[in-house]
Length: 308
Image (cartoon, rainbow, N blue to C red; front, side, top):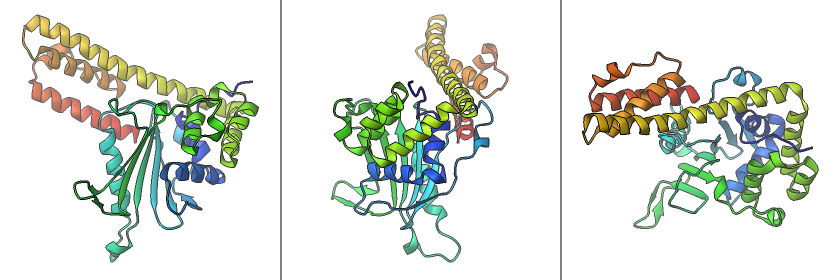
């Protein structure tokens, strides 16, 4: 029987990689991405898997925060959609981890690397074919960087050329991409043959247990629905914004009509996603373009805060 469980769903991702008993799986994923001169051998999960995190239908960003044996701080998350300000948020997370290390009376020299990693199921950089980007504090003009400070990694899973015939011998980061994108389509036995590494065997066993346990399977289905509903809301906001933009432009004959119409549509959809009273078109029509932009920015920030 096929696993039928997508590891990209937040409940599965957090249980596989955020449970202390699965720390070897997390270490395997981190080493595959970071490719450090000295591989990570131990990590402490600072926010371990907790069933209560998934108690409602709200879509939230469930990151995994950890610290390794040499003091590096790590944050890793799965993103199934591209949201505004994503890169800025990743930098903010890394910066916060870096700053929070320094306690009263501490020395700047004691600060260790703060690394933010984002696995993406959708394309972030559309004009670039590279799957894994590593951003650091650097002076590219002179080829210098400030080492062991802040790093941001983006891993666009769908950019890897993943083939069943060669995946068993592919680099580990590609094997992880295969696991995330295609595990649900395979029987456990076949997936174990394709991904023979010890960390993959453990990860497959966890996913298999989720598929077999009624309570976990129900939670998975609930979280998958929340994920799809959220994506539908974002897609609807974009489409309604485009439609209202065209209509507004035709009605008023103004060059900025389409832009204002898009703002109106996005504001109304985001208000619905946040469970707020939807502003009437007449009420929003009284606002200037700058005021509408400010309202939209505030709604987007509150939505991001609810996800984090």
